[in-house]
Each structure stands twice: as C-alpha cells, then as structure tokens.
Image 1: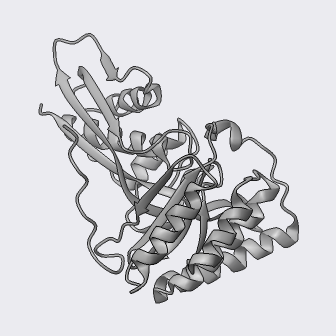
Image 2: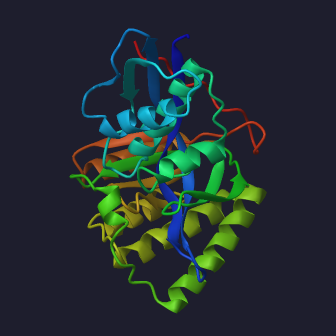
Length: 302
C-alpha cells in the first residue's frame, strides 16, 4: 500500500439556497473558492486501527473508517487533515474534510470512489455541500444527492466578512423551514434564472440571484450585517452579495476582469473593515470541462 492524498475545495456559502415545491425540495447551489482541505493517509499494517490528526477531526475519522470497511485489505494508519477553510462559517469546511479524506484513504487502499459512492458515504455522516463535484452545482444537501451541474463562471472575487461565532450545520438542518408555497415557487424561478446565468456567463444576473437568496434567508437565519453589506455592494458597484446560508460568512461579489476591479475591491475591503473585525478576499474557481478555464492546483501545506 502507498500513502494516499486527497483534496477538496470549499465554497463561499451558496449562490442560492432554499426549498423547491417538490418532495425533498431542500437544495443549494455552490460557489467554489480557491481554498482547500487536504487529507494524507499513511497506512501502517502493524497499527491496531485508525488515528486522525488533529484529534478534533472526528467526522473525518468516521469517514476513514467507512471507506476502510469497503477496502479489499483493511489496514490501520494515520490520517492527517489540514485545511485553509475556517470551521462553522458556511464555507463547507466539514464537507471538504470528508471528501478529501475519502479520496485519500481510497487512493491508499486501491478502492475506486466515484462521486455517487462518496455521496452514499457522506449521507451516513451529515448533510453536506456539493464540493465533491467540480464546477457550480445544484445539490440536495439534506439527502446528499446531485441535482445538476450548472457549469462554470469567469473568475470572481468575494470580499468577505464574518459575523462571528459558528453554526452547527447538522443542528441547522433540523430547523423547520418558514418558507411559504409562494417562497418555494420563487426558489424554483431563481434556480432557473441562475442556471441560465451560469450557462451565459452572466455575472450580473448571478449577483442578483445571490442577493435575493441572501435576503430570503433572513427569515430562516438572519444576518445583522446583510443590510450594511448590501449598501457597500451598491456603493462600490459590486455584482451582488453572497452568504453562508447556514453559516456566518457574507461577501461582496466582484468581477475580476472589470477594469475597475482593483478600485472596487479596495473600496469594498475598506468599507467592510468598518463594519466587521476582519476582511478576507476569496477567489472563485473555474473548472476545465465545465466552462471557462482550468482550476489552479491546490497548494501543498508544509
């Protein structure tokens, strides 16, 4: 056996999240960003079992055990998980850890793990984002099922802030949804609009849909900074606002190809710094085979 390495990208909240007028209607649409989780599994035939580092990554350890249960020759070893994704903020840190772990352990033991098989394993642990799929995807996060691959977009930046604290995604997904039948019909229309916008590379329409989704989510998990952030977006000429619907992150979307991008990003960061303690700029990912251009490789932590 050999050392296995797996990676998975995060997502800056969601471009859209809500409930459709159908059975199993809870869904989200990802916004992949250039931040990754990385898992390294070093098998040890003499080890009595599996160990994870850091020890708090208990969900990753559970995923490693699930994968190992299907291995041709189960073995012990050490799983090390490192991540550039903050936890509990709505950036899919937990989902990325789990996907990276499945890929690392599967590679080490010679077990093929296509996306559908990883989805089945994820469903045994928690609701999850669609970060195991490349590109922007519509995903049924509670039942862990891909709805559609929407494609890829030209590069954007997200000038992000954090309201503080952390959200337990599992507990959040147990909350009853306050959405009405009219809300569910609107979510269906928003998904249609977003699907068309991604195919047309229409960043302005993407921003409008993301902002509407953020505003509708106030009925479920209100964010105190959403109003000020929307105002900042208008002032700097941003595309719209994206949020972690089940997290604490919010951000202004900007087109990096815009000749005024540097000016807009600087103005947005300065304004965001006046309403929150920290500002982080994220870059979105594009993917070969789904749209615009190939994604960069994730950095390898030391």
